[in-house]
Amino acid sequence: MPELPEVEVVRRGLEPFMARRVIERVEVFEARSLKRHADGVEGFVRALEGREIREVARRGKFLWAPLSDARRATSSSPSLGEALVMHLGMSGQLRVRDAEVRGAYQASEPHLSEGPASDPEKHLRIRLHMAGGSRIDFLDQRIFGGMHVSPLVNTPDGLAAGTGTNLPLLPESAAHIARDLLDPFLDEESLVRQIRTRRAPIKSVILDQGTVSGVGNIYADEALWEAKLHFARSANGISSRKIRELLVACRGVMQRALEVGGTSFDALYVNVDGRRGYFARSLSAYGKHGMPCPRCGRALVRVQFQNRSSHLCPYCQRRR
Image 1 (cartoon, helix red, strand yellow):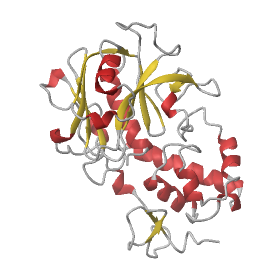
Image 2 (tube, helix red, strand yellow; image 1 turned 180 degrees about the horizontal axis):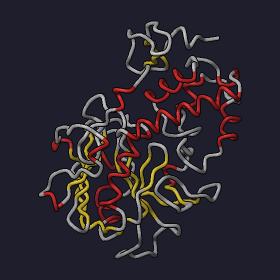
Image 3 (cartoon, rainbow, N blue to C red; image 1 turned 180 degrees about the vertical axis):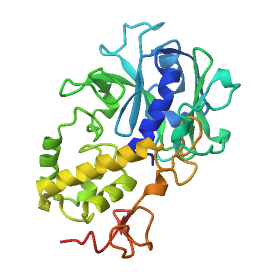
């Protein structure tokens, strides 16, 4: 599943083609991709056509685009407005086709990624036709992701909701999602205290999107390896200093991944131009079982943890 770096790469790729542009026409090819939209296909189309996207924002793994009220009767609209929410799920992709390049997928930042991946038109689920001729295609092989329109609500702290927006508004459907480690308004000391109240394994805690968002299995394993922490240690038994060290490691690994387009192991995650990220080349622990630990030289291992794999060095990350 795409994690914070991959979703931020997608957000940056979408922004030039969506922000301050009107959605002229909407095509829905798979109703299951609208499972979170209460009004069905016709309601989804009616809610979007003729409206302008103000900006493209992100919190953790969630993308949303606040909508203007242009060409829309506002009598029944929520007082704070609405947003188009885009969630990639396990295999969702958002691709841009720009009219100026004869319908090919448009490379917004080609130096960030390698590829391109194949163009899986058979997995096309939703298409947005934007003013100016560009098209936004939502592709999803497994149909775990999707789009929906959600009312906007105030952020509890009154601060900007996430990356790419100055508005203190976020979609109601994502209101339970915590701030992420790249959010300048994250209260890190409060987060450290919150983590230390939990009895759950530390990996479970940092994967909990209601505690800190955007972290998935890949970057959790990498950060735990960097901080020399065993994934199963109880969070409340780890010192504040060590928790801060873990958060610094997690932020650092995600920033490094973002610089090179994220992590791709297959064609399920690609940028808006169909290109893959190549942070997989820089991973130290995730997927490296059987290979020598870059720190101590002993063999890395893979073990099962809560229906997923965890990768670690049994020497550097001993469970105390």
